[in-house]
Amino acid sequence: MQYLADKQPEPGEVFEIADGVLWLTMPLPFELDHINLYLIKDGDGWVVVDTGIGTSTTKKLWQQIFKKIDGRITGVVVTHLHPDHVGLGGWIADEFNVPFYMSQTEYFTARAFCAGKNGASNQRDIDYYNRAGLDKELIEKLTQGDGKGFSQVVSPIPMSYTRLKHNDTLLFGSSEWQVLIGRGHSPEHACLYNANKGVLISGDHILPMITPNIGAYSTEPEALTLNDYLTTLPPFKALPENTVVLPAHKLPFVGLHERVDELLSHHHKHLDAVTEACHTPQSISDLLPVMFKRELSSRNMVFAVAECYAHMNYLVANNTLKRTLDDRGVYKFCGATVNV
Image 1: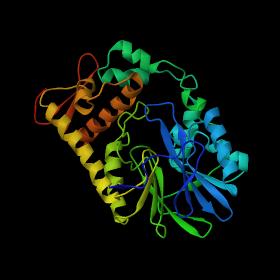
Image 2: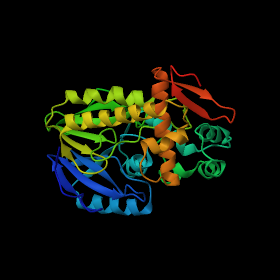
Image 3: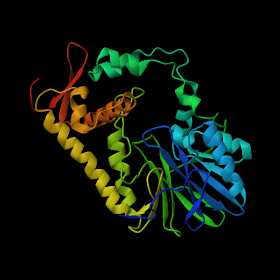
Image 4: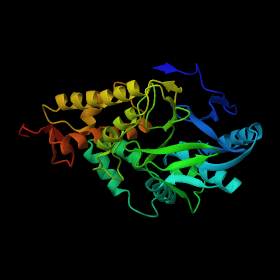
């Protein structure tokens, strides 16, 4: 793999990473401390691709960007529903009164998350973590709150949108961008590919250096998200090997086929490791050290548990492992040929 830069642009700056494509970054208050965003030339204006989280800091940085670029904003494309991508999408789209592009599942799921729990019980969240084998103190910490955290960093989402579907073609200026849908990291993640430029805006579906989180969360604990990812990732190898990949995190690169193979290998190694560990019955909690060698903060614990669930769901669905519920209400996983 070959990286196209040594470092990201400073927040508030723009860099032409490909013909008619500008690269910029916005800060994130997490361990992963930045997100890459892009501007696509559209006649005498620009289409925004992803927006950063909805904070006053990010908004001020966008206002700096608007002053720097020579032209107007003509549209907002959001690859998927996560707050660092959709956060200021509604604000920018409404500020310039331009189309708001998103896939259907991502759009309506984001709208639902913005609404919060609306008084619903958190018992299902408690059950999800209890079945993972977490202790009660940690479960209480992970399930407290009113479910409004999403809306605190996401500006109001427009009440109408332009739907993105797999293999749609978007015409920005004289350039055609093909919509390629990937699943697993989120339900219907939209990537944008321009064959003439040889550029793929991959969002979180394909990342260098780090791997996208593939999780089965408490909202859909039986989800087969890993199967979705392992199914929708290989088709990207149909694109040319020398495609310039513009990811949402870390550095733009060339080496698409190699990276797809690395991501597939990463998950199959995890599957092999947890399968080996399940010669005796194991809980999700037992398996976390098998998948993650670093100490997990409470925030990272949410993602780690979801990722472990996704791998175990995949193995159970493929009849590699079987799942039982013990007398404490904890899932135990064991080889399908072994009696528990």
